[in-house]
Image 1: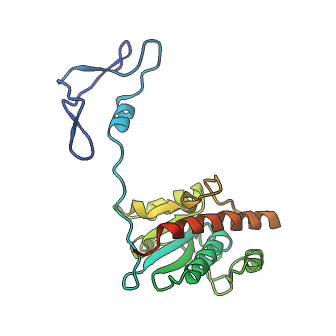
Image 2 (image 1 turned 90 degrees about the horizontal axis):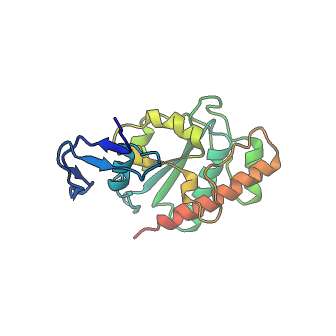
Image 3 (image 1 turned 30 degrees about the vertical axis):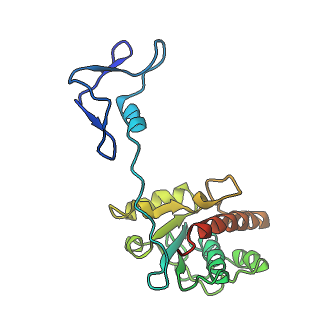
Length: 221
């Protein structure tokens, strides 16, 4: 319980993620958390600032013997993730990395299993040189997190549905595709399904930016 801006800290010693001792305290000693007149944050917030989360395990680096496998994920696997699949696949091929990096896509829901990508997605992608016609929708499953080194979702809703399928120890594989954008300041790839042509063009703009950024991080050593 907090009294007069002070909070009792039960731990005698705090360590960082490398095992180094931080802010040693005697049991029962109180830690000042805020200045007078300000609301004192919880000790957990203080601990998180002092002991940041450990970095995720190093990404598997692609080689021709052990290619990097990347899975693009949206809701139905007929608009955004097939577009991202086709864009990255072509960029990989154009860079001569087809034997080092493989790409697939899936959806968090089973609305369109075995269907080809949305015709509008195919048409807009084709105008930029991407062929999506061979793709067929499938649903994301738990074993995908063992099969693929990166599972890249398009938005927060996709992430919410994908996370329960992700086994313990594999959460570092689940990320948003937009984490790799280098030019556009966006956090999601918006769903164009109920919109018009501009929505599909926006998807392509974001996906191309993100895929270029992603590919730049994956150049074989």
